[in-house]
Image (tube, rainbow, N blue to C red; front, side, top):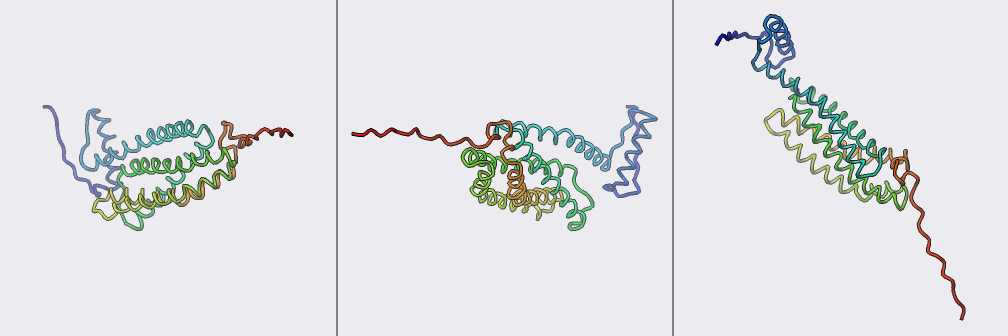
Length: 244
């Protein structure tokens, strides 16, 4: 068929960064000579997977956050509150990824991470974090109609705190069970999501979001009418007593 196959053995470990750099350099050099040249093998597949996952992150992460912001804006009838919730989820996800990377390198001593773990973990963490946010903020909005934003958030946290905490513990335990399986990708995913759920439950939903709402005040509901404060209760008209 006019095709030529050449087998080559890399001097570095197949899953190492040095081996991937060699494959990338080899592809660049060969394509300068013959554009249709292909470089395959396990290292090349790993390199292609990493590059694809990196491109997916650039597209999927902003798209997911944008769609969630729009949905929350329609649900809460506000702009500031959805931005606050999305920012809190992004911060908790970033903190979780940092802790997971530290644990994978120094605690579990993994040689590397599966390129799909970050994207899958991001989807899980954002979905679960926004789910808890909806529980909290929808109740806070209802309470704010009668008691004001700060008092409404306190009441909402009191009512939904037990439910959110219980659900967070159950989910963290469920994903934590994946860490005992003999597959690296499942161990990494279980640890990442489990730790992320605990951070979101006990730090973000219980402390960060309520504190931010207390600082922002009624403006968190901008541009809805709640941004001007709770509506004054209607007073019943005085009834004239007729003397007989």
